[in-house]
Amino acid sequence: MSTTGAVFNIQRFSIHDGPGIRTTVFLKGCALSCFWCHNPEGRRTSLELQFFPDRCTACRACVDACPTSAHEFVEDVHVFHRERCGSTGACVDTCFSGALQMNGEIMSVERVMEEVLRDAPFYESSGGGVTLSGGEPSLSTEFAFAILDQCTNRNLHTAIETCGECPWEFLERLLPVTDLVMMDIKLIDPGHHREATGKTNERVLDNARRMARTGKPMIFRTPLVPTVNDTPEAIGQIASFVRSLIDERTGNGSGNSVDAGISYELLAFHKLAADKYRSLDMEYRAEAIHPPSREQMQQFVALASSYGVPTTFR
Image 1 (cartoon, rainbow, N blue to C red):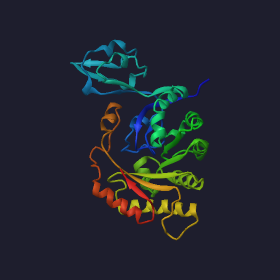
Image 2: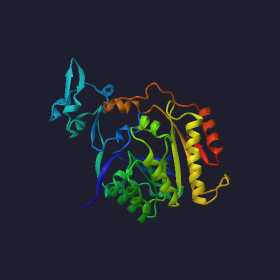
Image 3: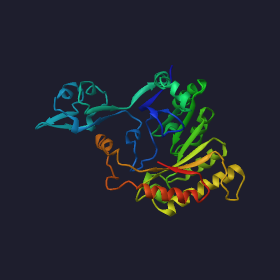
Image 4: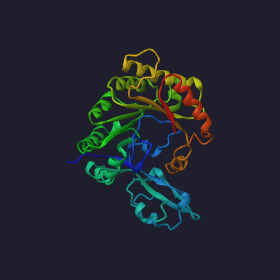
């Protein structure tokens, strides 16, 4: 029987999820609940319906198609009763305006590989490959392993994007078929980490240390979110932690910049996900936050670099 998993997006021609031109496969399910998350549709493991009321043309086809009476029109206003929805997708097939969309699809490894291999010539010419993201891809351990294994067998470069909040055994299982690990470090202070993400970060930092000891090429990432970690203290603490991992890997504690296969990237918060939250009836607590300026990003890059950590931003 083929291994299957819940996929909520396959993004082709990605240029920010590892080297070269890549295909990024997004898997559903995450243990954290970061209030600014740019992929809220990947948080839950189950398939779910997204409703975009601004796109609705009030054709009412969904009312007849829905087996659980989740759709209702009150004075020409479309009311979606999510608590009644069985996520069958029957209404989606009748919605030609795109107001109703199914978030997630159960896919086989073979189906994912069909999509991935469509762009194989671009991987070869650009030094790209395939990246598993999410959500948290390691939570779908066997599905993720099977995809990465198929890619490795075809000599495709592989990468994973992880938040680090998972049992080490899950990440360890993926290592033999992973060429690059991109891991988030959002905060060092455990209390602040809990306030921002719903959980403390002991496991995240422990997994970061374990991963660094494997010798795998790594890019540590910090989403720079105003009110969360946009301070010299917060970024300095993370840069110091990354520097300690570089020193441990190389055995060099002199503070000189050493190429240890570990680098650091700052990711600017943006508000492009706001519509996704509304479509899922999820509270968007980052509504009042403004993205950091380019000048702010450059200042934090300079700060992190001062710790001897190769740092970039986007």
